[in-house]
Length: 275
Image 1 (tube, rainbow, N blue to C red):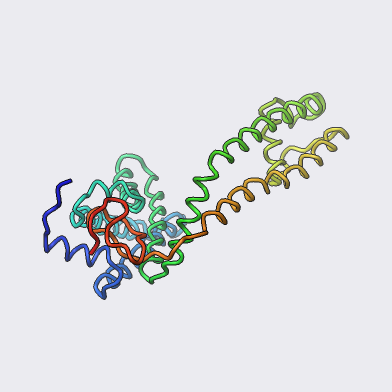
Image 2 (cartoon, rainbow, N blue to C red):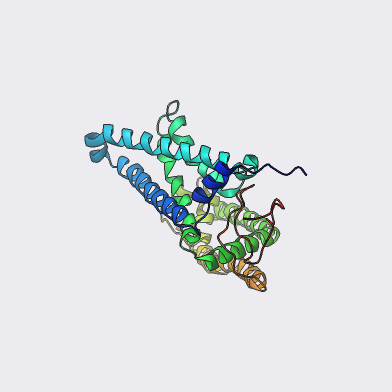
């Protein structure tokens, strides 16, 4: 594998933009967090019609101002890593891109600018900036637990899907002739899902005694069903938490990856030597 040639400008920019262990890097990240929060606040206020009517021009200018700044930052992030494609495909790389795209898309599709609230995900960097390394470890444990539980939860959701189809069909037979709410099997399935998840909108209710008995049974069954995926993920989290060590906040200057062990010398994602 060819080794990328050193570039002092790239290394300096990387230190400022990616590293939170230096004064310049921490200052940059704190300013960035403030800008992110301000941009999200602008998007939220823009959705309030009285404010939009009064300050539409200001919101438009601020929205584009933030977008230009974040676009420049994204370009600099790609420039100062030695393997831009690695960073672009990483979690934060994708989030950084999605944080600027809605404004440009809004030039062609009105309303997509409200998707800029996705910038709030960039606030996850607060854990790295303020050296909350143990939060990074817990986040990694949670992600591993979700991935490990994927097969079990898929089987469970398939069973639930079959269950609501069967129960919905039964409720259609019981209530369909006497209740306009259960006018079709899909409507009955909708009621079953709402009841099984204990949401209970109340827009459709059974009127027959048998239908009310079945609905009571489904409500009780709902509590048991909700507990199953929670138990699956919890078990995987307990298993995954064993042996986990705290990570540092250093970012690889080649691929931009974070979450390395405190004693790591090489990046565990691309294999290059760390700073």
